Image 1 (tube, rainbow, N blue to C red):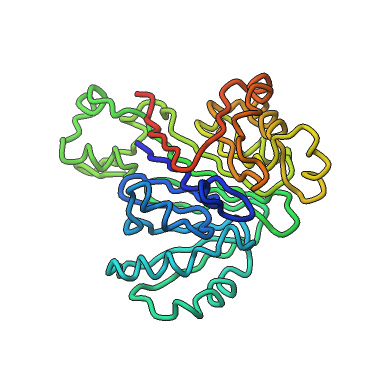
Image 2: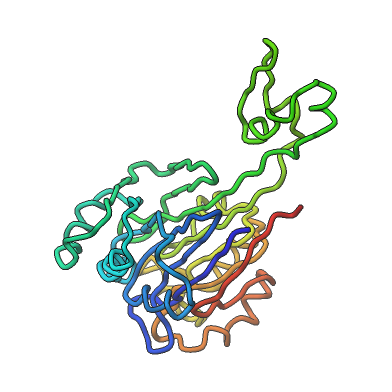
Length: 302
């Protein structure tokens, strides 16, 4: 099961009822935070989630509303007696930006490791999942992210027994390892069925619509996308500042054939995003004007 929480949904500046956009995902003991604007740690406390399991932080770009909450978050993690290393992922310049912000948070009881993105598309592999970073179209270098959990095929007991494999080797084959028994080599494909459907979450914000986003979001279980403007007359403003309207986001969701879309990163001038959803749902019915703290538990199909 993958837990997803959109901690904040605001763009540009926090409001009394809306924190800045930040997303947290929890899976198999891992915590992944994407963006950390002002107020993120307060939003986390309001949700009742702990920062302690966060072992990966990803940044879309380095505008203040996406990273200004970092010093406070690091101090909170340090005060929780964290000692495990923290991996940070973001566009080129990440270490320089974080080092500047850490002038006010210089002493931490844990190491920070940096992975700076330099390609238009990069995959970062972890034992249980992978992160995919892809360039989007903002007025500074900016990335969207996929979290992808693949699933191997179901272990076929009958095949294992037919092959005479001892039970002590079954778990290794399930984990994708090759084993040797009585001088014979056995590979996972000999006892596993076809790969099963996994889970995929796509997060993108601060961008114009691009075909790349549609491609990378294809068939996502959840597509979390910027909706800076809901007002139909704000298209030219969205184009000028390299942002997106609700309707453009819905069109991408439709073309990417995602299961569900959450809008986020609203303009401070947009107090009631839900007022515009009727027209949005005509484009993509499974659209939601997300509010702070919106959570989903994504489960495997079988």
